[in-house]
Amino acid sequence: MKSSTDGNVASAPQQSARDKTVPGNAPSGKAGDLKTRAISALVLAPLVLGAVWAGGWVFRALIAAGAVAAVIEWVNLVPSQRKTPALLLSGLGVLGTLAVQIVAGPLPAMAVALVAAVLVAVVGGGENRGLLGLGVVYVAAGLAGLMWLRDLPDSGLALFLFAMLAVWATDIGAYAAGRSIGGPKLAPRISPKKTWAGLIGGMVSSALVGLGIAEAFDAHLPMLALLVGALIAVVGQAGDLFESAVKRRFNVKDSGHLIPGHGGILDRIDGLLVAAPVLALFHATLGTAVSWW
Image (cartoon, rainbow, N blue to C red):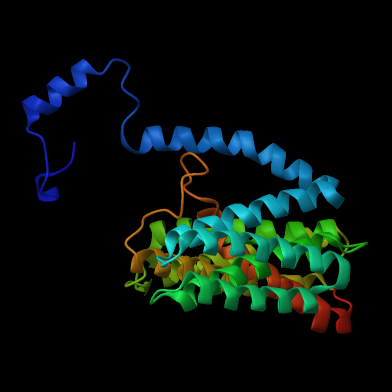
């Protein structure tokens, strides 16, 4: 039952009566939430990991579906004057970006994403048109980065796992350190629960996971993977904060309801959308120069 400070609360007798009239009430609060989250994870994880392992067109189909779902959430999140054409152009924009990357590579693909972003901003209209268009680049660049990593001929699976598991480790390490240590807030106006201790804990967790993956796949410079893992934690948290800032601006708790107990797909991949292109850029430039993998 909500506290009296919520401003719209049923009295205790009313609440009791209501509870009695609803047979089989679901577990309340965090217990029910945790159960729903666990079931969703158990159903989705094998499908996602199976597609990642298979690679090729199976994996590309998963990325394409995720891109469309994510950009739909973005357009629904950011107010616009003409939502239907903005949705259509956004979906075509992210799919076009992925298709061009497969055929012509990442630079032409990013050009397509930028053109699509401008078109979405112009057609969608409204005072948030720039943010509306930015969502196309945010989603397209992030998932194109993931696809580029997985499509690498020799190290694709390893580097995809590096990106995904490093972001997961960041979230887990940040949560554990933030809860146990606390301390100064990282960005109180955007995400009041995040702390500097949590960021450091996330960096340590991500660095160790990066090192572990590098050792498991016989990378040439595993200690460099340790540093890259820490970097991934920082940029992943930046992606998380970016989406949180957008949701706070429009007073929205979750980006969607696609995944029961987890919110929308953007809520689950916000950090990965920034971390993946950063890792891809590093691997294509400095990483290639020093043959780190």
